[in-house]
Length: 280
Ligand SMILES: Nc1nc2c(ncn2[C@@H]2O[C@H](COP(=O)(O)OP(=O)(O)OP(=O)(O)O)[C@@H](O)[C@H]2O)c(=O)[nH]1
Ligand SMILES: [Mg+2]
Image 1 (spheres, rainbow, N blue to C red):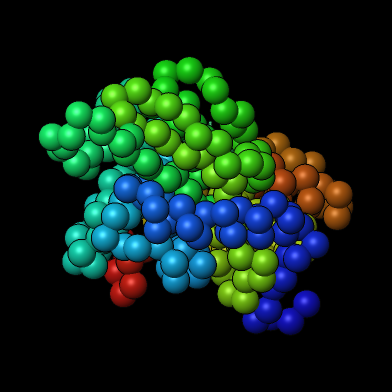
Image 2: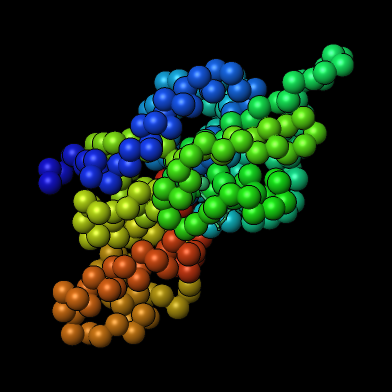
């Protein structure tokens, strides 16, 4: 694999191409577009297709899973998106208060109509895989209509849901580019499980995680002492009580466990990206 090129076409599911085709006219016809991204890597979750075809005037960016991200990074990102003039919210779909805040935002967006028969407001929920799109709709509906799961590609079809109060929501399968040329971005998407790291070396993925952790040492438990990637790795290695024989098998187990612990928030509140030219 070349250092600057990463293709995961072998993973790229056929339904993504179909979803893009179907979403295109809906972006034009829909009243409100909710783009869900992961708060821990707001730029890596940007998608060229969406950037090209989404009418920005009716888009709200939802940076989700904010409770797993570094609060300092969240604050810096809020400043950044304000300056960019974007409509956005930092969200946690597992928190009922957040869901009612999103509901209010959608309601406020609904045009006041004097017509006797109002057409329902159509809200399109879209974004990369595993960001929480179906979870958001289930929470707004207060029932588990849609299948959800901690991996990419759970939703396979476009599904409309009637929220009542003249609001209809569309759930869509996560859309990801067939080819990601930037290896760092690919690693971030693998870390946050928007893609399966099949063609990507696990060493590279964890290396990017460690780079990010070194910029926010205070996010990790105090008991972990480290100054660089090597000492961070051996601290985690010891903490996980891995067999110190360090066979290739143990090494892979260690990398997979570290990946899993990060995804579940067990390593601390860690963000992968910070606004350009900002550090913590
Ligand atoms: N910690 C945390 N987990 C969340 C949040 N929102 C969703 N999740 C979890 O993220 C995982 C993915 O959620 P889904 O709703 O299936 O994501 P999706 O965007 O519909 O994914 P695809 O259908 O694969 O594109 C599930 O395990 C959810 O429980 C959140 O705000 N915080
Ligand atoms: Mg889904």
